[in-house]
Image 1 (cartoon, rainbow over the protein chains, first blue to last red):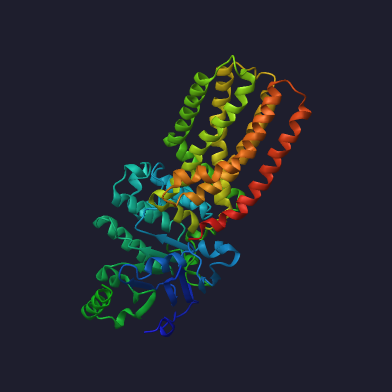
Image 2 (cartoon, rainbow over the protein chains, first blue to last red):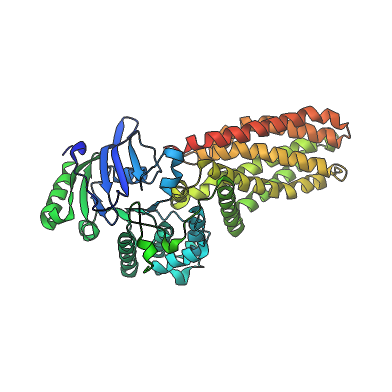
Length: 251
Length: 249
């Protein structure tokens, strides 16, 4: 299916949280993202699947304002990511990645509090502790990040990403390294954000993990959405086999 | 969570928690946030500071033992030694500046935050400036001790020169540190890019210091001081403006 023909989700009540139109990102001659359009409303979750190198992470980095698009536009909460330098739009986005994005020499609390200050929260210390409690890592708040296990670091990283209650939460393999408690805390936190009107975008290779949370599912390949449908229209086993076919077609 | 205002949305359905509308930090506030974070990290680890300090003292020692006092007077040699040591030890701090953001991709979180890109540059530059000044506070008296040069009467002027020289080196070095950090040869690339730009700073600082140490009239040092001031003004502004363009992948 052409990226231009992708169906757009239609939010029921509100304006979309994120609207991207014709996003393109090239690296030299390679088009990592090739004309992707999407629209997600409050409470919606797009699970994005695709083989390695399909452009999923690049798309997330475009939506987070980390990369400038070569073409196309992106609005977050109705604000253009690049107008005014993108500050207003970036303040509404949270980013969870498989890299922790933390400072190893600082404590968990200091890392999250630093993020809270960067996002201009009025009570950064309270917000940081609340986020750490949400991720069930408050008991290690004063431990240096370097002394925490990979899983605990990932929980702190998620606390950092949700401390400002983002309107759009971009998650790139967020369950990486999490144990059962951490996974449950993350699922709960994501559910809570959705219940309060945030949109989620979840990049994962794990179909069951992604589909469990999704309201929409998409498969990306060579920078384009090759499938995009509502969760209700997705049948697990046939979707999995279609996904496998697409992935192996590139091998 | 049960607060009805929490769900009262007009735009998209989501609002910040507990009705606290955030106030995005301005340029200066964000600059200080980033600088104080970097200083906190350095205070915890102390690796770069001690490396720079030990490097400065070892360099001084080597220069001292290589010095023939019968051939060159201390007062002629000390200014050059001081500013060469200062430049190279400063580079160690500049290397670390963006290195702390590379581990675990902390730079991504910094770039995703709603602060101006210039604030990242300025925050790094402020932290680097304090780092370099901190090394100078120990290195300058050490030079006076090794070469037995009297700093008592010129310490205030020397402090001014040190501040201006640190500003120039940090302005350029911070920008090049950001450019070099993503390359495989960062340790080599940073000195290669920076040192040609440091030449006017080192020359002006050394010439001014040598005139002050020789007890020459202050008017003789003014042309060199003007070079330092001009360099600082131009490069702080130019590098702050250029910095956002170094971040695009």
